[in-house]
Image (cartoon, rainbow, N blue to C red; front, side, top):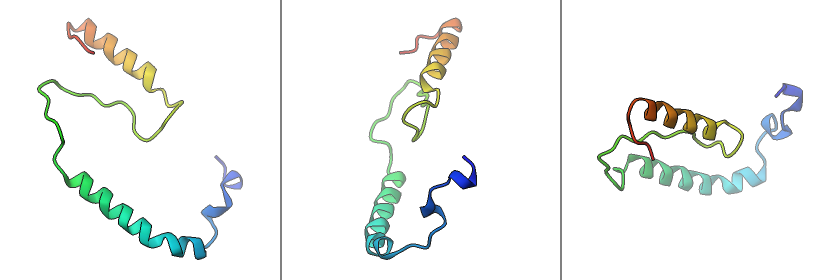
Length: 80
């Protein structure tokens, strides 16, 4: 994306709405930080591979997962 195509809010100064929502933002950030510090809810004996992140669609996660599965099968593993 070129700078000319960037949304206007990228370079505008925060307004009243941002100021009013800042306490909610701080609380949300604190809750997320606490959640990230917690131990995982479950422990598994098998290795786990996570493909993807916050991208919802079009990032190539499915083809990547298929190729990882094929490579694992070629090495005698049983993904799934």
